[in-house]
Length: 315
Image (cartoon, rainbow, N blue to C red):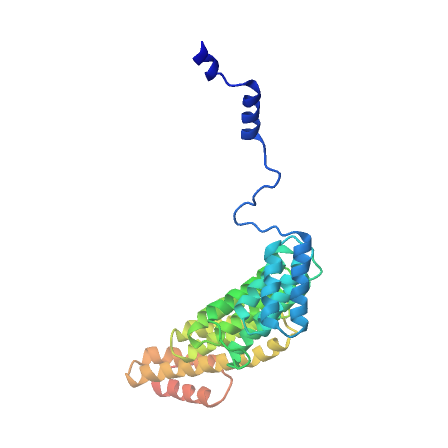
């Protein structure tokens, strides 16, 4: 019996053990990976960042602004801290990082008064980088970015506001960026076609349509798929004149169409000459007739007509 009594636990002890096991501590540990600074700490850190910024200590300010936004992304000063961080990164030629930091403002703080400004600054940065790539004027920033990165930046600008005029501008800049690389002609044509298809009422659509025809003509000049490229170029210029008749590119397209027709006439005459020299007069006559049919006069008209007469066939 004595042993049994000693084994029993006093009810008071049992209560203490249960409460010790189930009670919640007054201060919980933060979840790993989260940052929750007090408002006082955040405001103090932001004030230190501003003081360093105003003193010209941009590197220190940059770090403090980043810490401010990271400590509590939902604080009242986080949008301003993140925005200023992006500005300082841009000033220090950290263009890729600056672009991404502006994107954080755009993504996280759409209700902020800095949202529109962040979008504008980001777009200006992307276009400046693209223009530097196109003109090779890369001296104003230290490290040129890869063309794929530039295109990605412009795509982000486009997609941030797909219905705004900035979207058409960004898509047109993608075309110009690809065009600046001779090996990216097909990509440039595709990018310009997206401007025409997706933003037909934008200011950039007529120019994009003109560029498509121009690039196809350049492809024809290289001798690859000459006929098909010239035909596609002519259709592009004709579509331009029909869709945007009052635009300046439409007026320029008229001259390009005339040039294409002239090149086509020359090509027909040259093919006729090829067959004529091989004494394949029936085949030669087909092309000489095309020259005569498509011209009302001029050197090629007269020469083709003379060849037909020498062959002894009618026009």
